[in-house]
Image (tube, rainbow, N blue to C red; front, side):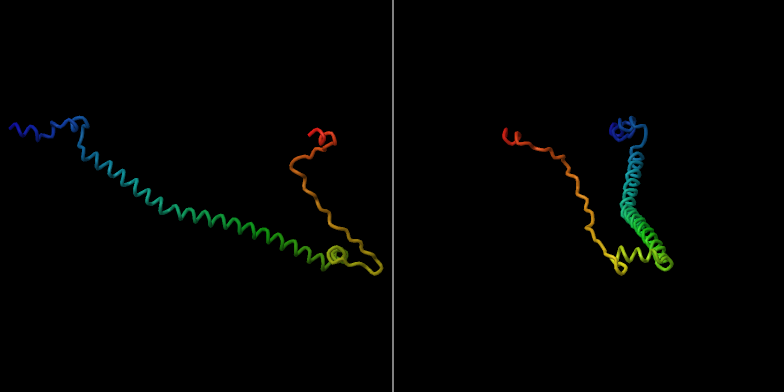
Length: 135
């Protein structure tokens, strides 16, 4: 009977301290770890899909901007076409400005286009003769 005392599970201090079955605790921990692994796997599966959806959404926004710009340009061209059909003063203005045409006897003066010079990043200070001599 002395050997039976060593085989009795109630004599194991771990069991008395935990207050329950160690295998139930391990099963619960295993289930939690399995759930985390499955959620991570699903997340890794859907991350490329979400990135692709974001990329396509950005492309859609860019294309919508291009469509809007093209529609505005089309509207401007339609207005210009109507003016060319119905307004002889506008046709004369276009002929003079874009085609450099003139009426008989008129002289056309052409000027070079105005070029804006960039402002230097650092203001220049004037140097005097005394500055050059002292150095």
